[in-house]
View 1: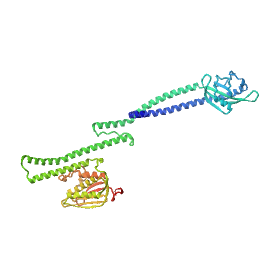
View 2: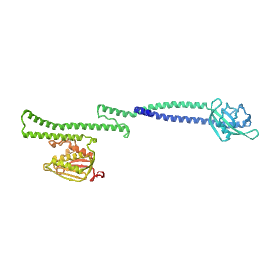
View 3: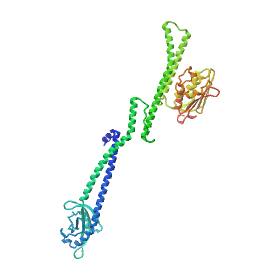
View 4: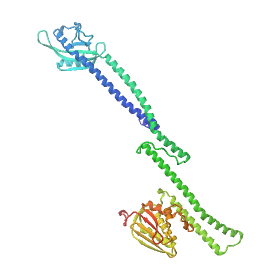
Length: 481
């Protein structure tokens, strides 16, 4: 049985559906056929029993005629016209048989018949299947009678047995069984064919989906779309929509990846070109023996160092953006936002020693990745330091999970605000300043992963204000306290 089940599971889905439909129909047809056969058999036997009942009165009348001479009765008795049953006989409790006048044969008497006769229960009437002396099948009715002997005294118990042939009834049942078997076979074959047709029609959308998947795997063409057929909650329609959503997401991801590579290549080209030019100047000076003035040489080396720093920062930003959600370096954990912000402020003060950075920090605890969150805060503070005038002020406030960083620089034009979180986007006025255009993209991604939101806006009185809202609490959860 296990082997058959394993073999069944290896069959194609169409074959399995066809076999299941055929099996279900075969079971239903078999149940209906058997039920029909037994119902017809019962009706035919009921009709025979009714015929035997109609001959009962005639048999009782004859039993009265022959009861008084039952002891001298032989198998040959005068025929009595009008009795329509084929078999009729009287039987005593000791097994003596007396045929009625128009009986065509003798019914075999069973021990059950004698038990009925000996019991003498006049109300007991039984029907059974039996045979005559030649072995022909009969439908037999047995009735117990009480007879009087010749001197008016109560005689031995006597039973009346009448019967009709079963040949025609059995032939009818055999023909019916053959017809039902033939119809059942045709029904099962038809059900298998219908199941195969239904399976093909039902799995046609799956075939389209399979072809689309194979086409995507073969050509890497993510523009393939499958027509959505059926109702909105239909399984095939849901599968088609899911596939279309998947290919759309993959296409969008590939487009973003290609755009990232193209933008990265463009951003890398400028520092690499500058770096190569400076190194070539230094190399040519060494090869030609014409030394570069010390001031110029110092400036070239400083430029090389700056370009190397910019490249390292750009590569780090690219690595941060290329990480998927499942590749985050540390586990998300409860982070004390004030401690992370203090670490970012120390780094910002080193980068802008000439600036005044004020901080009003209240305790707040969030769930995030500590290193990523610190990097995001550093990027926000770096922007504020970068665009603040010399000797300017940067105001930092953390109150109930809302962080605001306000600088007093030139501010961001209104038409550029929608693009500030785009990758590699840089304001035309800031193209000459160091940076890759990825810092705010990293900020937006990190804050979104922590369940918060970040915005940039022009501050009243000039400058830019960055606002970060993070869900959390002023005290750590009990399990981390």
